Image 1 (cartoon, helix red, strand yellow):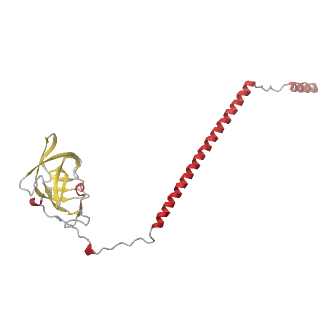
Image 2 (spheres, one colour):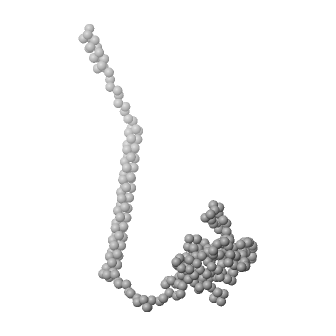
Length: 252
């Protein structure tokens, strides 16, 4: 019985068939071939594009190398024309050097001290001014400030007054703009009008902008800031009143 059982079991195993292999239709084969051709074509196009890019890069590199060689040749040509030693500076005797004019630097700039006399055309008088390179704008003492219109434009009328002056001087000038200034002793911004005045220091006459502020309790009625001094003056803080006090007959 055992032997018959084994033979019977073996017969069952040997009688099972392998799973059938699916067969492709002609259309499916053609479709697979077409997909393979498309993939191959795409790959060839990408490789050709990369090749063209590499060719362009090589051309650009060759151009850059050629330009660099030309630049190096130009530099070498200029270097070959240079003298072997730098020229020695020419020494001019002191007696042949032109002396700067009185109150000016060698390059012609006005020389001013820590304090100077300044002539204000609108006031027809001269006033002491403090020269302060730490201040941006200039300032002039003003009281009773009034803004009015003249010929369609804004003007300012104020009185210049100071502790050493007996009378107030009325001045009228065009209004340029308003500025906001923060005082060192206060947190709020102080809104001040700005006017343009013609002034004179030494032999120099300039139109300058001044903010209006009551300076009657200060030492100087006028303060000259950096905007007025730059490009035209050099300050020597160790000196005062380098320039002479302007007089009416000196003002042109």
